Length: 335
Image 1 (spheres, rainbow, N blue to C red):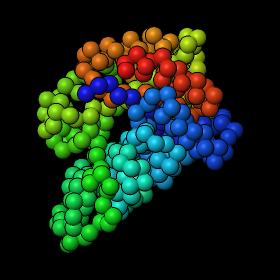
Image 2 (image 1 turned 180 degrees about the vertical axis):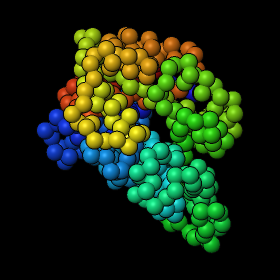
Image 3 (image 1 turned 135 degrees about the vertical axis):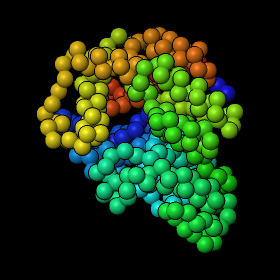
Image 4 (image 1 turned 90 degrees about the horizontal axis):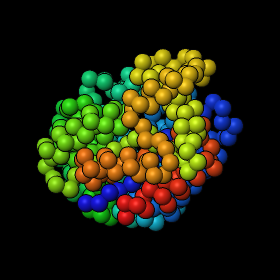
């Protein structure tokens, strides 16, 4: 295996200070996917949330299809789709069609989810999320092989046939999470592991060591998402901090369920720096960013790095410059 790079776009959010319409934001971010392919990224990743004031990205499959239509070699992945919110057969159908449209470039990343409000919206008990994910993975793999005969705790099917089947015969399934159970679930039955980078590096490395040690396959695609920004002039911090502060506060609000006051709040520079240090974010010049990624590679071996270079509030031109710089000055050094 060699190092791989996937742009973690994650969301199509509208920052409260952004004057663009959602139509413009979606167009701009689809263009960033095209640019990512042009400068050497291997993949492009999306995630979902529901009922978030800034829009997040509530519908993954249409956006994945739009990216597939605009690109030729870039893999498109959901990182992640919240499995318990989906009907398994419909999800199998959507993934199969995306595989066909993209000519085998779609990766289905799944996880259990965490927001209580979203579980209530979809009428699913949060306590059932792990069991539902396990059954859904089993149903998906069966659906892409032949008729589904499945009788589980949450889903039951007698000879249901998903057609058409994926053109690639199957769709790679990636599983994400940070809890011990999530790590072991990925090790047991996934094609790839989506590891959140929201922890210090040694904790992250130990998690990856664990999933590789327990893995059922030697070619498990280990993916690491990190807050990341590169700037040739050495001002990565200045160009990233406002958007990072916003997204960090949003995650805190999503976890707590307290979204009120999010748009009016802000943090001082010291608090933002401390948070970025805790996240082990990768910010700097191309040389500095390259060295930080290389040190990760020295510790954990080759992996699939997902830099989160666009956040709500970062303008199109700044994002384009950073993505192009990362491709030209960082990815190229690993090839």
